[in-house]
View 1 (cartoon, rainbow, N blue to C red):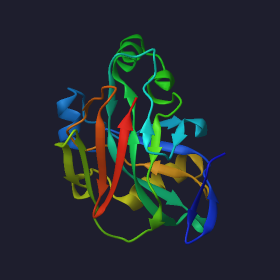
View 2 (view 1 turned 135 degrees about the horizontal axis):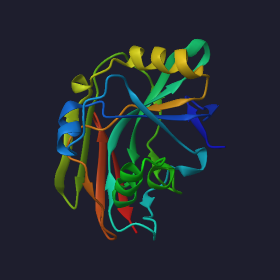
View 3 (view 1 turned 90 degrees about the horizontal axis):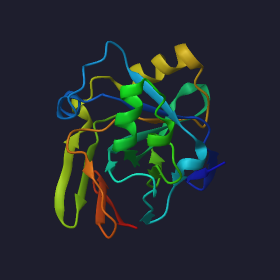
View 4 (view 1 turned 90 degrees about the vertical axis):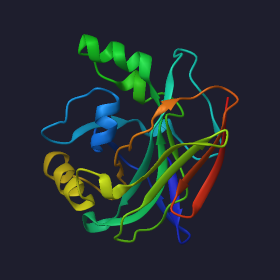
Length: 200
């Protein structure tokens, strides 16, 4: 189980909740329908990576980046920390799964499909997300455009599944998702924090 540290205090990560279709412009760019309620899926804990290298799976020819605000839940179901994360998606595999009505696990939960930055104490505000590939800005947006508030997502997940300390919520991606290639250099950002990553 992955453990993250906030002010030198360990926090083992439990369930990884992922919210899809939470930004209208992203919904439109993938030609999806706006959901009546949050679209939620899970990633296995083993999909988490925190280094500076993304490794693309051999079974997909079309892995997309999705840059997201990630929230960490503490005691009493409070949001205690945040970071930026990448929800890597094998889009070709996902398309087949969607067509056949199958789960998305292979497309969303492969090893290394959940990259996380460094968690910092949560502040109640809007966050700015960005991603550049080889110096070209691909994603550059604010969480202000999210369809759901942070508190609504916590309550929604808790009412259905019983949210616990150590759970994280990947809150969804704004527009600008796209394909990654081996050899790409990424700059992932949240507000003034930047992370330089390579793709192999």
